Image (spheres, helix red, strand yellow):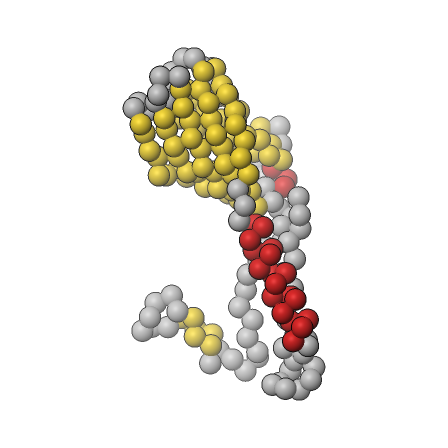
Length: 176
């Protein structure tokens, strides 16, 4: 796992005071920050086959290195039934339980499985419980934000500025 460290550009204490980063250094930091942002958006893919048994694990990750994740799963059986789902999950800070939601479920044919998440033996697990017997194939695309990713975004203003949400345009942040 890679620790993500954003580089802050030193803008000095006042405009043109000569205390901030030189332009070349500032633009190197900008390029590095964009590279980090693009790298955290990559989905990994794994393919798993299961065979009719209940609660079969199709994904596992150490709970102590898991903050949140997004899964896109496409499950198929041998009779052309297909099921696709998106699952978003977050772990409780005490690492004892996981919360998840499933949405965007698309069926071609009949429903073939249900999905469940749990923490077992210190691992976050994504399981399938098939509705059909026989072989199921699962393509699991996932993006996990590990606990050590250190991703935090914040608004930094100088001490004389006020930041508030616009009442004329909800969601717009105004700094004065």
